[in-house]
Image (cartoon, rainbow, N blue to C red; front, side, top):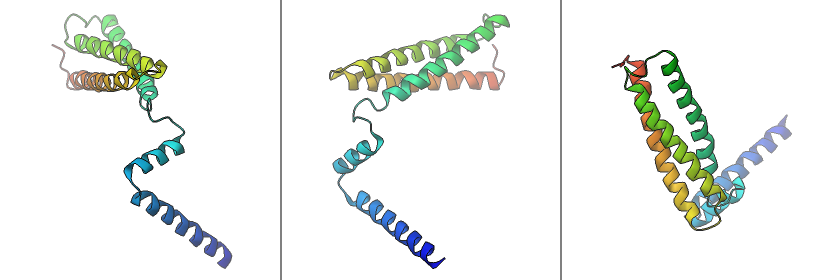
Length: 139
């Protein structure tokens, strides 16, 4: 029992030392350290996540638009227009994040940053749509 406690105490002490060493290092070194731990290159680290999430949200937007058409509410609400804008934004974000992943040039970071901004705008637009549905704003 005492041996287990001793080994656990050494493990915790080593963990604290690693964390303290990490926190006291310069920002450049710590960023490289985290990059090496994650196994991801420094550029294009957000683009795969943006592509995956925007493609999923694009499917949700198509589902909302189809539901409004089936229920014949598309002409009487503002929800379909807002969802259509979100669909266009998510499609643009998907395309730009894909280009960022595939690009080997300096434009890769630009594509990623623009895709990130467009993705956030699409999220805000989808949030407004959800609030309209939640509060029964049909006209």
